[in-house]
Length: 254
Length: 254
DNA sequence: CGCAATCGTGCATAAACGTGCAATCACGAA
DNA sequence: TTCGTGATTGCACGTTTATGCACGATTGCG
Image (cartoon, rainbow over all chains, first blue to last red; front, side, top):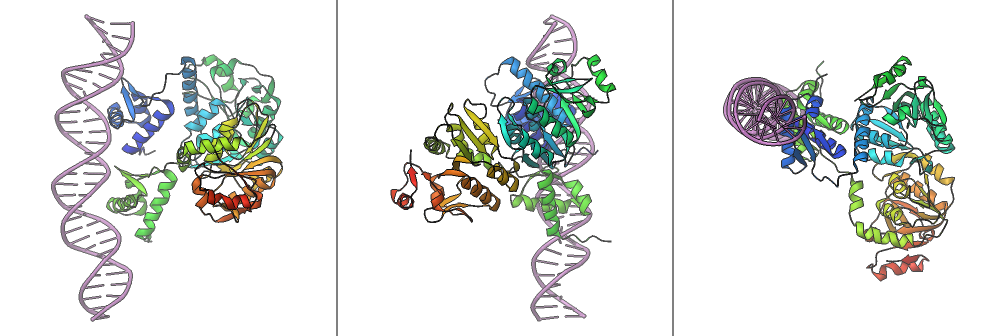
């Protein structure tokens, strides 16, 4: 693959990521863009000269760095963003994506690349907002009564609309997952909706923050065989993942 | 077979690719069109001169077209908030509200009082976000393909869902309004949607920022008789409002 | 304090750039 | 047809930009 990222384009991409994550690490960027750290440093210096970021040892921070968030919440958001980036890497060009409600999926929506002709189908207003207006996205909203606890529409009307669509990839929100029985959910109606979007999709990606791997929930939603990809944190115990691999699930990590 | 691509045609093709991918690489284009990079550079220079792209080292990037959606939210924000407060005062307890997409209506959603048992029915993700999770609100989302220019779902699927609901109050987005013929809109599908929600509501409130009173639009949407309340700025010329009052419209001001 | 990572600077090289110029070609006037 | 004109193109040349590496200084951390 001829790696043709234009210099200015790279700076723009760095800036985008800066705005999304609040910080960037020079070494990571160098590896990601396949250029030397010198070039990255020059990019960051340029951006800093324009007042767009604050240069710090090892990388850069967003210039308008808001009040430091609660550390727990901050780390958690950081983890979700890194999982979201991995999940976004599973998406191809011109694909149709079902994206369920949930904070991790909102991070996924933000991490999706522009100019790829993607169609995002979602029941969650915040997921829609995350891609609306960005170039290269079509957005289809699934209507219905919105459950304030989950932040997305569920119910029979929503399910019916979902059934009228066929997607390439599906990202159901994960309440709990285990390698024997698969996906679990807390709510009856939520379960029915997730089943509908999984059924209507070619492949299914489960993004599981560490707690989801050991959590348990009330309603069985999908067998493990319905899960194509699993995205988990980098420091996940390898022994926990073996049964997933044996069940034919492709395991992805940052 | 010598491919005969006219210079002008080539520029159009470059522009198409630019809009699709967000960037073009000069060397790639030269190879693709079988011309020297010099010609490609000249093309890109021309396009940049027309403001259609941003020339950068190695190629060109799509001119950063800021989403006018964000912009509309920020201009006249104070005025919109004050009009929204007045409009929110027209809402009673336990009512069902149709709220159309639009920056003024987003301000309305934010201004709606909590703990009143209100049900908000909307085609706009940002309106849904504005009330979602606040106590005393039910939210019903109208699905369909979301038009990025207006920030809400429109189209036949959306209209059909709207027709299944009966509301007390309706807040259509106002593109233009006049006291003889009533409400006007720019887009065909938008018109159909607004007609549907007005039809399905007991009363209709038009919130008109000053520019809307003198603007004109292409599609007639609703006769003046369908408008129950008009909300306008405090400094509006009284003479402009008389014909609305004579047409039976209740005029409200901050 | 010591060490490793990171940083800034200078330099060489390669790629891309702008400009000027000549060749080519379509097209209309003579 | 013949000529002239303007548009378009490719090439040569000097300039600018981007990149990676070397080297020494600085920073963060134990």
